[in-house]
Image (tube, rainbow, N blue to C red; front, top):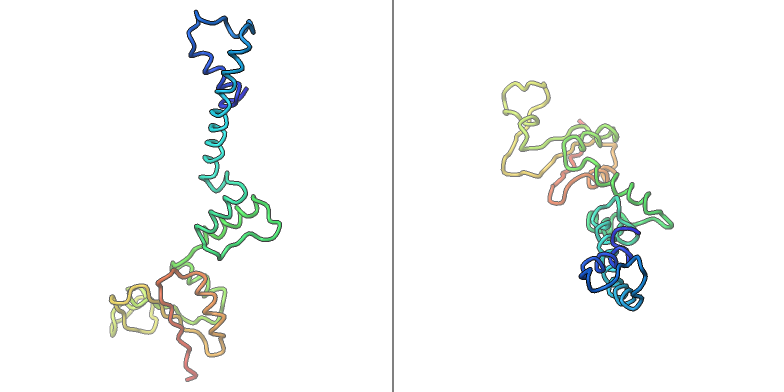
Length: 190
């Protein structure tokens, strides 16, 4: 007997009946009453099992079947479909891996810069670290540029002249958030 199964619900209903009216259930002297109470217990047992099943679907780790696909659709739209014959556990692992990727952070842009090799410089106009104060010495000795607090969510990415803009654009689109403008600046040949 498990919590919430038909026998458990039957015993709970039976325990609420007045003891003086019926013989104890251990005597097996009330088959009609037991049949009626078992029939009353069945829908409650089904509701309890449905509640347990529904509760499991509220967390990705305990979800099964189509509920995992629904969670992936909620998080990523149509960008992370289930692969053919992919098991639930491997799909959950892929969703978690995609969910915890660094995105829209300077660390993520720097990782793309390090992996790509054709990105020369990344500048955020609203970042004092990148722009500091024009015409003054900077602590890191990089070339000076204008900053702006009027363009939050804009990133300038300077790439070398032999870089493929479409490849770099694809890499950066994968990590940027919606609404963030990434401008590719091709390095001049001088």
